[in-house]
Length: 306
Length: 168
Image (cartoon, rainbow over all chains, first blue to last red; front, side, top):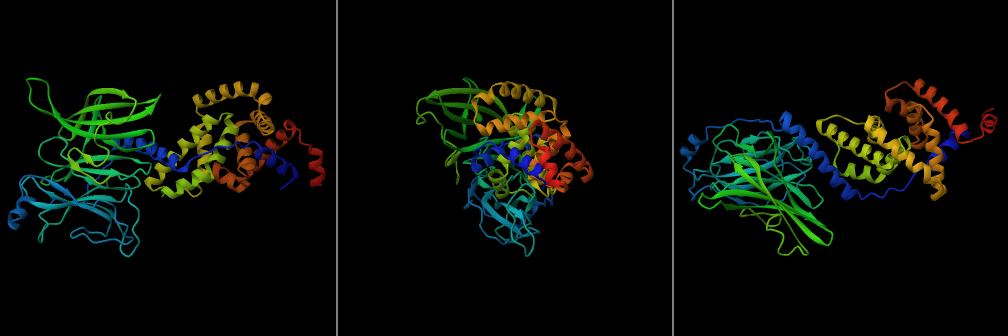
């Protein structure tokens, strides 16, 4: 390097200004921004592909005499991702399953089964982390005996990690929806919801948000950190003289100017679509008594593992 | 594929340096931060799609510099830069005086020379790396760099005679 180059390098080096960056916080913000970008793309090009086949479920189940339960429900198995570095085997799944989580499910015909979330692994190779290219959902109804192969759906939006959160009944129709939590790592993860349709060709349908004629996957912020809290709850209400109406309330609150400020978005649910009904805002000095339930251990009546 | 660890390492090790590099081009730290973040988002999405980015810092540097070329960013950056330059020297420390001098000198160069000078002297990439990052030949880089360094030497009052003596 010549002396002029050395001098220029030195002069340029002196221009550097300190830029303190918190990689943990910044990575979280960045992930959210990436997710927003990906959501935009998903709304136009379609994020979810379907692979696998849908079996003749009703026929098979009738042959099998599955356990009867009152109504369609789901209970949660330990929902934390497996730390196993090696893929597991899920009967009927044609590839090694990584980091599987599952829950027990009872179909509308009260047939027991399972819902799985797992990553697509490779034989004899370490499991990759879950992401939006390798994460799949599986639905197997009537799997308590030698049952049909699970219907596989995906890959789903898993960003840099996801797991089954629970199966709340968000629209009050007596049938659970599947809640998948997408791990953000900043303390405020987000939830995506799927309708479970065991007798359809497509066993899961991601619930979408419809606004101004534009449909995007619904994401619900979940959790919080520092001066931010978020969550969701379900309730049934309706104007006087009309029947009950089920709504999903998505809320967030932040602390600023000496108090907590809560914003609640009341969403109307219609099948796999939610639309904004109205927004309510309120403030209080303390969070106690102001912030709704949800975002912690309860989500539309379903106990979850945050 | 970019993962969480890679991103955190990038943010810790490379992000401040790259923001400073882009700020030298635009004269505006906020615009530089915006551009680097945008470039990082694009890199992440590309990686998510399966594209391979061999050198993330180099890719981000060039992508962010290109992003600053869009008109609104440039206009905004220049307006802020002019306002700041007017008062910066008087109130800032010696380090900032150096910065303002270099920014002024760079501002007098054509954009391509400016970009190459920042990649070469601030990010300390060699001519091959600069050529790869910009997608041009090494000869183009050397040619532009030669003109840039001559102009910078004058503007920054670096004694070229001494340089010539040394090279002789």
